[in-house]
Length: 408
Image (tube, rainbow, N blue to C red):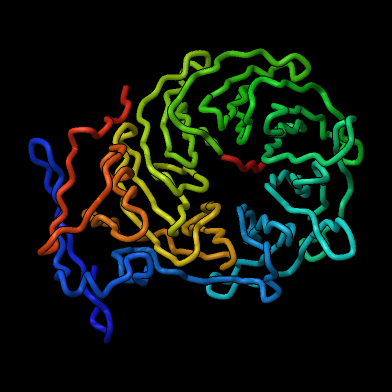
């Protein structure tokens, strides 16, 4: 990493592990370090290999409007945009994405409801709002989306569905401390409840595959249900994990989960007995997506891509660092789409050259070491003289070893 322009400083790091210490060397001099505010080092100066192909940010980006997640189908990006509702963006020209439609749900004369998540099935968008349950929107003409149905539970009041997934005419809604709600949406004008399960205190993410529902629970649980009969779901597994999970994705019998304190990979070959393959303690991960041999993790500082051909030993191969956090990610063809908070939608060409030696990132998140090394650092990091950091690792806790989008 480095820079030649005026005012930039080149940073190089080297990491060494000896008997009881971890040493990181930097070529920044002591005098230079004293002049730096590590929380405000320009993100672009850190080594990365993902460059934006195109960007879209809403000009009417009012307070609280933030791009949270994205799904791409047939050159249309469907962006969950918080108080801005669902934005539909034409991405056929990657260098110049253009908004063509939007669906917002008004709460009163001054406010709109907050869109937590979206799921797309055919010509319908299923939208989980924070106050008005699930809205079903016709998107056959992306320029003029309109509501065709609404689902709320019979108890009335505000209903905050945090996530959802649609599969074969059935909706699976994450309802936080109220558990999971299963809804028949085969007639979008008249959705109705099939069953509900208050199985835990923090259902946050849900993924459905082959009549099996996988649930990410913030109370550090992985829950698995058999929903062959959606009227009578059967609990298959309720496994304690180390991740306070917020979202989940299943790919080829592997279960990927992310939370505010890390991410984990689990063997789901037998859904009744999921096994921990690897758990990583880190912070700042917002979402996840998996395709082929890559795991995509939006973070507080942008986006990181891991190669998972060796499933138990993911290797970081690509990075995009930004002053605004990545919130959600999706891939389609040769492109990566990042929902990036108030910065809107960012598009990357996926034909990147893998970086084999990404340096440690200094700054406001020393926990980044956890992602690379699989350690939980519980010591405070101090910068020493001559650009050398020495950290005691006697108390380092070793790692354990052993999402939510649908397109029908």
